[in-house]
Image: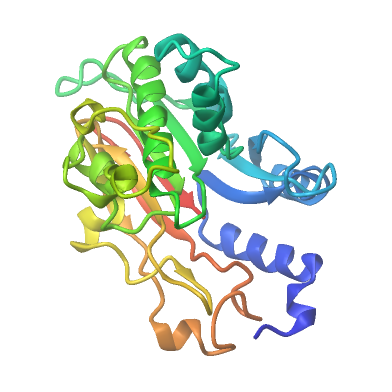
Length: 330
């Protein structure tokens, strides 16, 4: 449904780059960035316009030739932030660790192989700590201003028939972030952006927004009717975290957008920007275009106007007692 010329990488790249730069962001979170495109186009173009960035490709070359594997990219404006720490998370590695070290499985057992086969989907996450280049000054009302922020960027597994895997990935990501943030003092602001491949009625959304999942949710009871699906989740009461997170769009607009992904096969919300409510405040959320705008140049995305099938999420975030930053999650 999209004109072939509009699917060429050069056209799509210039269109997406223009859309990103038009938003004047301070931080950019990108998913599904092809490794060779990051090297040849994305990094150089954003570097030339004042950004520094890091990239993490998916774990294995399961999508074909070297360089054609996609991954996550995270950029920040050089004159606004300095990089303090940068880490990447491989969910395959976390699955190995969980199976052998936490659950004590024999690596050669059928049980362990089935567990790892279910969970090893090559997805990754990125984590950076950024420090304000011009720190907020101490004042009477703010004696200890916050001058750092932690940003996580991820792309969870896409297959709709694996909600248990997405929930496990979300839970593990939150566990890793919890360990990381707690070890650096509990007042480090946190944003988690990305393509969670999960609609607002899923257990993934419940976990992020409510710190827990309901034991009766279908996503945590997948293998009740199917013995062939290995049980990868612990007891539902154990799937929790201690962050108080808000969804930017839900907070600002009062609900999630009508869509963030608009294709011929699927139209719905999969992408989110989450923030720690005790030390970050969303000041704005850019409206998602109405359906008639999205379909003006084609029945679905990508189109000649929108070169991604996902719609860019944009917010101005304020560090409580500190500065503000413009955050793009695409």
